[in-house]
Image (cartoon, rainbow, N blue to C red; front, side, top):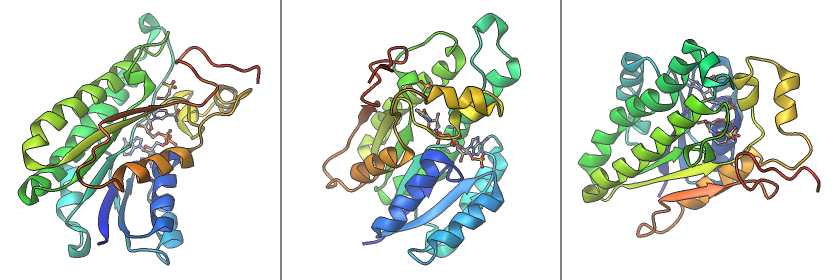
Length: 252
Ligand code: NDP
Ligand code: 8X3
C-alpha cells in the first residue's frame, strides 16, 4: 500500500535526493518541506509525473508555521506514515571561545528545537493510529566531538538522545523510531557552514570519495522498506576513506 512520507529539508542534499529516490522507487506519496519555495515547486514539478507530491514551505524554527502547515495538509496527504527529520545544518567551525552566538542559536533552534516542533506536530496522529515510522538524520557528530565542532556536535548529540528517548516513549504505540548518522556527505552542507565560501567548502570533499546524498537516500529507503517487525534503531555510515571525524585517508 502507498505510504505518505514527510521529508524536512527537501530542497537540497540528502532530503532532495531522498525525495527523488522515493519517487523513482514508487509506492510513496511525498510531502516536501523547506524554506526555499522555488526549489520545492521545481522538485514537485519534476517528481509529480512519478508520484503524488505536495509541498510545505516553513522555517522549522517557526513553531506556529510548522503546526499550521502540518495541520492543514490536503486530505490526501494528512495521514503521515513516515517522518524523515532531516532539515539541519552546521553554522560555522570556530573554537568555542570565538564562536558566534547567532550560529549557536541557529544550530540549536534548527537542528534540535525545529526537529522537536515537526515531531510534535506529527506524533499525535501516529499515536492515535498506533502506527508510524520516524527517522532522524543525525551525524557522526552526534557520536563523537571534533575540534571546533562544539555546538554542531552538541546539537547532533541532542538528536541522538531524542532518537533514543522517542523510541522509548513511542514503543508502546508500535511506532518505529531510528536514526541514520552519516559521516561526510557532499551536499550544500559545507557551503552553509562556511557561509557561502565555495572554495573552502569544496576542500572538505577533496582528495577522497565522500558519500553522495544518493547513498543516504538508498539507506533511508532500505530502512523504511524492512518488514514491520524490523526497526533499524541507530545506524552509522561513513565513506570508506573516513574512519572518524578527524581520520580521513586522502592517499587512495
Ligand atoms: P544541505 O545544506 O544540502 O541541506 C539542508 C536542508 O535543510 C535544506 O533542504 C534546507 O532547506 C533545510 N533547512 C535548513 N535550515 C532550515 C530551516 N531553518 N527550516 C527549514 N529547513 C531548513 O545539507 P545536507 O543535505 O547535508 O543536510 C541534511 C541533514 O544531514 C542535516 O541534518 C545535516 O546535519 C545532516 N548531515 C549532513 C552531513 C554531511 O556531511 N553533509 C553528514 C551528517 C549529517 P531550506 O534552506 O530551503 O530551508
Ligand atoms: C556532518 C558531518 O563531520 O561535518 O554532520 O560534522 S561533519
